[in-house]
Image 1 (cartoon, rainbow, N blue to C red):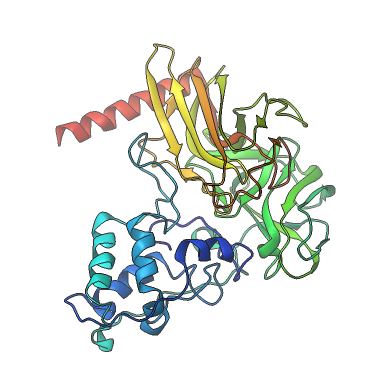
Image 2 (cartoon, rainbow, N blue to C red):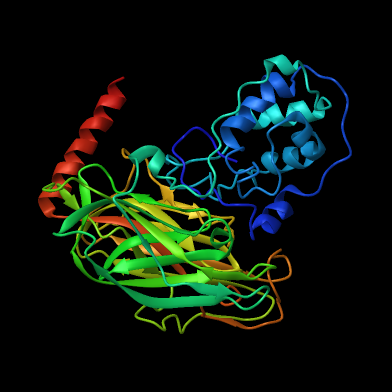
Length: 442
């Protein structure tokens, strides 16, 4: 489900992850018939068209379309339960703690949930079909999502091909391809987007990264697509080098031959010099960290709940624009907290219902994006659930250690971070204080 706010998740074909969404939505109901004041045509279809149908359509990742009354009615009570418990649309953030203003918040409002619940309780009537709103445009998974905002990318690169065998093991492709002749001088990147090739590639690429030196030209996860850097911000890349493709493929029930990943890059104009420079998403670990292989301290006993914490001291001031938790199938919760040099603590964000099959990048609104002074400690907390209560736990009897497969574990957060000079930090802090004072005076 999606709303009219800026979008960020993949418009995939009916997908490998449809079983996970079916688990959330359930199977069709016997029809409900009692009439009530709310109707599908006048009241419920507008909510679905704004929030749901970009995924729940024939070319989307949703396991069933929700375009018509006939599509929706068999699932009415399942939809009611899932929106009432906020399992759908996927937005795994704890709404009781931490910053709550995000550019890409796709959760339903209390009013929208109440409308759906009341409509189903009243018998899920169709109402007058002439009051049905027009369907929104429904793009397929072949296009670039960021093109809706930014236009066509400046260039697109492809990974080496890989065949993913049906129902096999996870596969992790790490290969290099030359980056030559694409640009003729150093340029600043405005945005990137990484995805699997349509249609079957998007079904098997679970997550991945493509980097040029230390610069990410795409970081992807199911549920997260592109990265657009903040205003007046760019990432500098050089005109030569090698692209490193680090791609995790998850098999489905059919062979996917010669599939590829593709990354698109949008550049700032030639000669553009941004006020702020960034390296995009940066990995902050709750585990021991370090280079590969890392995380020798991940060791989860059978039938257990395990908590792990890690700290990172910022040696430079920074603007934090997003965070994206990353665990695997035993992951349950992850949070990121700031401990400021003056001793004050602030929860920056907490995911309390992590989903390995839908990994969201939580993008702060500009006026609340954390401004972190030099010396701030970032405290990362990870919670794993290796019990039978975890519905996607493959085997709670197993000891679980670090590894790249979905059945192994990881413990880190990808953070959108722009490091600042002392002068830049003071300027942004003064501007934030001015805006806050203006709002308080209203």
